[in-house]
Image: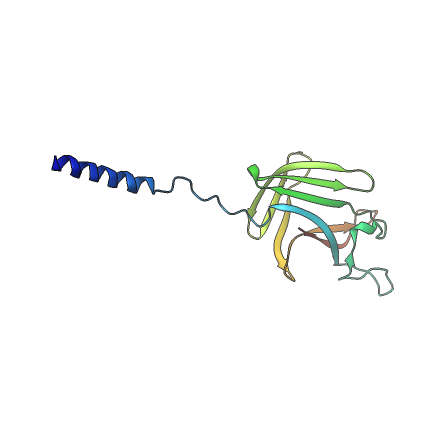
Amino acid sequence: MKKQVYLLALLCLVIGFSSCKKEDDEPAPLPEVVGKWEIDYGILSGLTTTADAPFQNGDRIDPHTQIFWQYDFPLSTIHVINDKNLFVNIYKPGVFAYSFTGTWDYTSPSLILKYDEANISDETYTYGLQDGLEQLSTNESLTDSTGATVGQIQWVYHK
């Protein structure tokens, strides 16, 4: 009888320890880049302009004005979704809006958007903090009507 009580106590002890085992692991924290990013402004650099030109290196350009030399800058909102590392880029040049989809990879501080459309190249964004705000930024060449590069614009997105 004593052996049965000891076996029962031992069985209860083993079951007690095994039931305390954590079965579900904590979900991994979301990467910083997950969320809705909206274009905020652009910073000009590398311009080969004269002092009397309307824009200078370091100027901040508001893409919402749609006025900058001969350029119409598109508005863009990027939705970085954690599920299966998907994203949607809502691209608005002028009055039209287009949706582009794909997958993303993130290795701090670089976010790479890989588009499903074969004719769109991958885009690389840099994640960082500026004045306490999270931001993504990317560089784009500015070209004139002949296709010659006349400078760069760094687009800055905020959540």
